[in-house]
Amino acid sequence: VFDTQKVTPAKKVTNNFSSVNGCKLITDDGIMALVKNQNYILSLSLAETSMTDQGLKDVARIYSKAATYLGLTILFLGHIDSCHSLQALTVSFCPYISDIGVTYVSKCTPLTNFESGFCTQLSNLSIREV
Image (tube, rainbow, N blue to C red; front, top):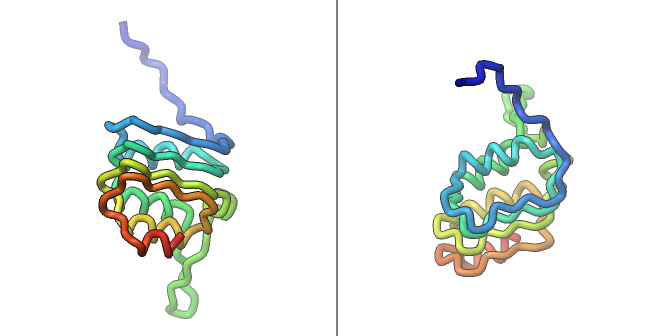
């Protein structure tokens, strides 16, 4: 027997800490679904996921909007609380994260805690960016 009742979208919630540590099958799409339903995140832990640079770029961009003023594109933060609330990011054991992805997030918000153990594609540039 199938339930034909409509599925309602998840409510946006306030959550200070979101973690999907060790969920190796979670990809960029899963992280985007998680982040889109959060109003306020202080800490995001993505250790041992299949997150990529593109996913981190999308996370950083989700809160950015582009406005055009006199032919110039000006970037501003659409959901300022969400983007600037992020203080801690963990990407340890994420083999698909490089300096590029970390740079995207660091441009969005000043991180006070950054964990990146066993990330073979990160260099001194990531450390300088955060």
